[in-house]
Image (tube, rainbow, N blue to C red; front, side, top):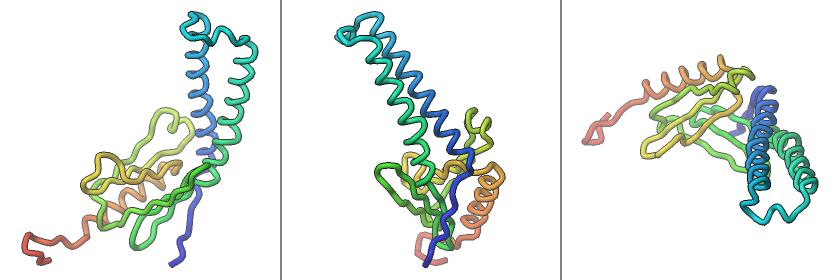
Amino acid sequence: MTIQWVAPEQSYRSYLQLHSLFSMLILGAIGIALYLFEVTPIHLVPWWALVLIWLLLTLFFSVFFASRRFLFTAYARTEEAMHLKHGALFRSIRAVPLNRIQHVEYKQAFLERLFGIARLAIYTAGSGGADLTLPGLAPDVAMRFKEELLTTIANEPTEDVDGNE
């Protein structure tokens, strides 16, 4: 069986880049606080060296790493399962069988709304959280997938206690 992988929306790349930038800004603010209050021996290092390191890391994570994450993210739906492949450094391919799905959630945070994307979280029995989250979907695609999956799981034959259908 050949899986037809679908890339996330192009705006997902910009979302990842901005998300990385926000994370690095928070890390930078913590670094400034540590430097100003001399909480750690970080004050022994010249401030310009710390700023240079922070800028290089910010560029790396916001431009290169976020773009790589985008390039290696894709999803697919087959007759048997929903699939997700992702990973910039460590690649992973996950699949959730359609007959194991119990709950599907459409999620869209503030930043995702700004970029016009959404996530679809897929839950199975016995898990503490989402077993599979499909990121970077167009909102209409995410809602269509949600409706299709809910219809699929509603039409699944159920077994009673004795194992009869």
